Length: 251
Image (tube, rainbow, N blue to C red; front, side, top):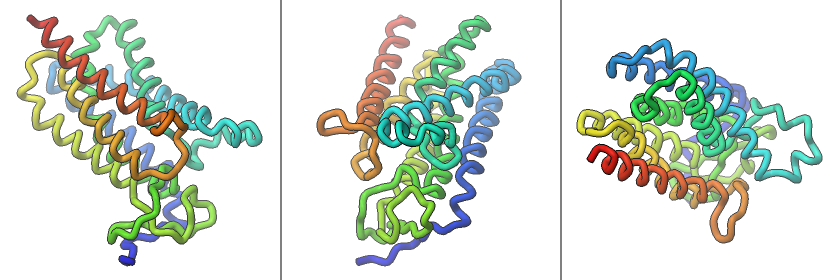
């Protein structure tokens, strides 16, 4: 068996909230930068960011609770203890999107233009925030003997202890970083507002579906695949629909 290159101990557990918060803040900061470059009011990002963060936390926690109903039925007070780990990105993305679109509708802003503005920041936020998941041991992977496996040993870790695991949290982080880089690279080539978000969703959803194969934590069952894989497929389908819809609309 290959030696593990990383072991997660007690200090890392306290960094979960720090990295999640840093991911949100960096995502918002980058979105403000994008807004300025597109001639939009960057102050709108601050207001929009509040609803995105609210929706992301509520949605991520809600989905985690829904796919673990038995545990939270017996431990209802822990539903609010999201700082201990247990945020499902897919749920957060769904509710954050609903909150954001409602805000943009009230403000009579162009939602397609703003979706493209926010896309890179989402990838950057995912890349940083997932380090917090690694710290807490949530979203852990299946056992493996790969040289980059991680081992958790702190008793409060949400991951199985003393077993080399796929570092799926890092896989998610790298996927977010890759999507961020792709969004920046193709941004100048986008001709129709909304298509950048469409490409981002299709790419991000594909990564999420594949990475789910290597995860071992419970994410809800839907036949042979997980609930979060269903959501990932939905993101891919939505992204492809947006790409085609914006192209057809422009014509």
